[in-house]
Length: 194
Length: 194
Image (cartoon, rainbow over all chains, first blue to last red; front, side, top):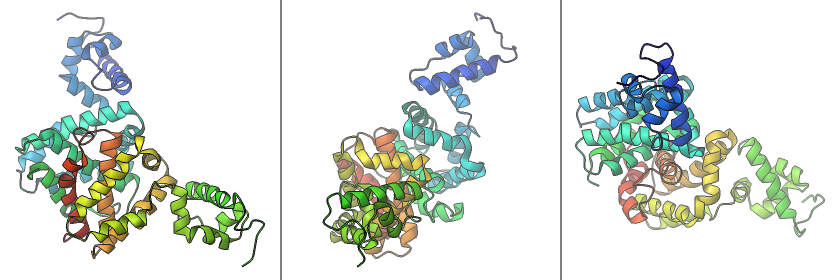
């Protein structure tokens, strides 16, 4: 591999790549950002970006600074089988969001996505391509793109009404109350006949 | 009735009241705004506010500058009976939003509600108290507050994913495609066992 000025062991190299990625994804969106351009901004060889982050997707997810690995969450949900998957999605979703005081970077991303097209594009990539489409595919469903968008409409709506608009009684209800109410909706979007 | 400086026939009196109402609802929210305070700001007797707008609710709805009367929409939906109500709600919702280029003041309200607590409070009043709770009550349902909040979670999520985040294929789908997909969700939130 060709080496640029920085080497894998360089202190701060990973951080420099990550800073360049955040800047690029944030200003140009996911689609228009390339590993090559991020590497150039960070002053490293593209292979070094892949060394640290594995792929453009890995770089994207690292730039989002999520509190957990979405691919692992999806795998964990699917490991429980298709029965009751909708309810488990609700419980997992609420578990992650409720565990973060103020809902942190996730809520910031949602708020930002409402007014900035770039943030909307990043949320679209994360929610649809990284989380919900693999979830629908893993559940063995047809029409994964349509199912992912339908799932997103309910999940984003739940996040907005519970954490931002604070519509009661949904805002204060616990997961045991909400899972059986919203679970069947997600289950139908995941595995029902469309 | 006691008369202040302005009289019902005064040109601009209605506009002055409406301007005072928009300012008050926008800055203090629905709950903290009184007909009396709006009348004082507009320099009129409170009875004149009621003369023009009927009630605090009527004043609130006028201040929102909605493209149609929400009570009439709710009554029209309920007039068709409970069967298929969920699908008709989806069609009506999409009909109103799609007919407004750029989704106009409705989308502005949604965007504003995400970052301003006052706008969130106004959206809460409009969506839950004026539209969705009466819809659930009219459908003969128990737990109207919970049903209204669940309905809101799907309706707001649909608005956000379709018009703001533009998640495909939901963003470009027509009402005939979306109504059978989302209708059963709204039907269950309206009339299903909770």
